[in-house]
Amino acid sequence: MRFAVISDIHGNLPALEAVHRDIKRKSPDLVFNLGDCVSGPLWPEETAQYLIAENWLTVRGNHDRHLVDHAQSNMGPSDAHAYSLLSDESKAWLKQLPTQMEHVENVFLCHGTPSADNVYLTEELSGDRTKLASPEYVLEHIGNVTSPLIVCGHTHIPRVIWLETTGQIVMNAGSVGLPAYDDDKPHSHVMEVGSPHARYMIVTRVGTRWSFEERMVNYDWDHASRKAARNQRGDWAGALKTGYFRPIKLPDFLARPRIEEPYEDF
Image (cartoon, rainbow, N blue to C red; front, side, top):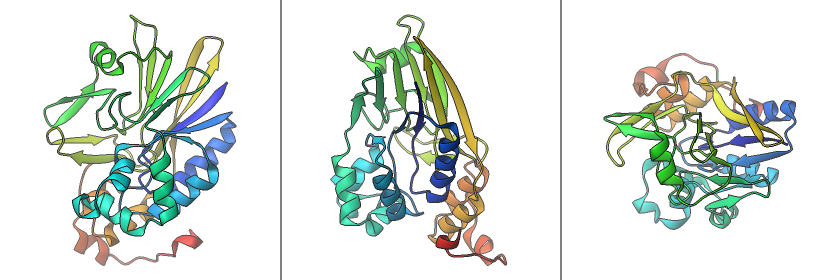
């Protein structure tokens, strides 16, 4: 059995399209999507419609939940922007997504942890940065889930963690659409992977053994960066362009000469 795992697209449609082309070349049996599908200053509605058409097995992320459970006036800028552009069909699709699931192949899917979509599973906070989660931390946060493979997202950092005491593996797929960000919960910290590539994982099972292939896919991240900048998000523009959390000064960035085609011609 072979399957692809994607997560944290955040409305980055050109990154998703590039990843999908790469997935097709790998020919997996299934594609799992671990949520945070559309939130951000990019292409939320177009991304939602793409995912609806593909009909991959998808669980809901914390930002997907915010978009259907919170009033727009209580949303942060990324969620509020996406909400303003989403159709009723796309909102209804987000609302019906499960928070977690166990696939018939004994693979457990969640966005954050099995019990909380907004808690990191494969990273622990350490000051204003994060570090690889300890086995004890991971065991505490998977609770009573006994699936041999648990796949998650939320941190945007690809990881594979083997739990020696249980024999389980926890895999984080990384992020298709946003390679760096900052957050203030539970306290201020930065997440970054160091390059602007779109990331996902290919997982193969032979017998009872699993193997993992991290895929780093090229796409036109300058195009995505400028889209974020035009929507007044210098933080996203810098992250998309570099893979580091280095916000771009928008007046200077947008004043540079450029030739930019509309998205449908991209």
